[in-house]
Length: 450
Image 1 (tube, helix red, strand yellow):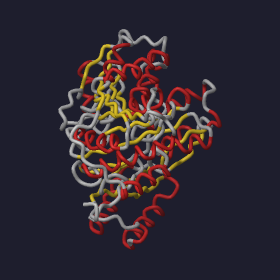
Image 2: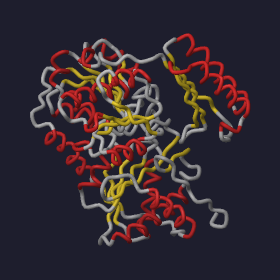
Image 3: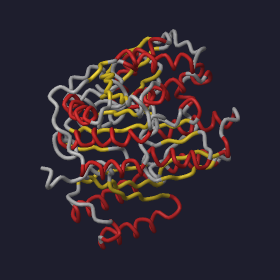
């Protein structure tokens, strides 16, 4: 394999793919582990320690084993905290004596996929330059397979992550509150209910029983109808939906209304403006955010700085412009300060629950300022990903649609960064127009690229 080895290419969120196939195969994982060890030696930390965690997929143990073989070959000590969320792993990398952290997760993807996200010692995702260096090192390093790499299980370290919430919200008392928590059978299945119960809430667990194969299967942030049913049946005050690795949060209010990232951005932006916590009267949001968010915030003098898709892009814009709030429609919320610019669905839930006006008046009322434009998103499976502007039929039809929509709507046409999909999204004031145009363009993309 060494003669034909192809270096892994880090995407917007680490490495991701079908477990067992490159780059998520044992050989590549061993090389990545060894390459990370060599890279960390530059930091001058001795001894070098790396902390690892996973979101409960069946493939996680052998991926961890392969990574550890490479890390140990590079004289790196490996600590495993087991089942956890991505933000919990990033927290440990930042606050505990580790040079880096590796989260084994494919986030919202199905169970047959997996991936790795690497965090530096400051809890931030590995810099682009470091990822490029890892790619290059993987070609030249070929560590020997070690049948029994040294792994130190330390699940108790996650207590520090749980305890930080009590420090952040010392006066929060959720006694009398009934919360439905859907952890997507993923990394937050144990952490999320435990943290919320520590504040006194009555917690109804939904999809909190990972078996290695059921992660994201009709549950979690991608499928909030599942917890919506539980909220209505149990008369809960709020439903909390995490994705597989817990960095997204979608909520369901007491009336059963699903509240995505745009709802959350609007609520938090207005509250932060009222309390003098919104510098430059500006938030950051991606191109996926609804026009309704822009219109709602404009009424209150708040601007939306638009970024490409991906929480990494939102974080970069927030740092560059000194912003306190940003996020994605998918449920990634990013707060400066206590949030440390790390997407964390559980942190966002507690931030929401800490707002006195939301607890007193109900969450449906708290979210009422935002009214979305009708929007339709279709994911079209594709066999290849040529630049869309170079496909004449698609480019021409997209231009015609944008002309028809004018200022009262918009088209977003882009490929998924992690899956073989082309995303067709249209929004406008008229729902019938949205349905017609989206179906038309999606069919054309399917014909040309599917």
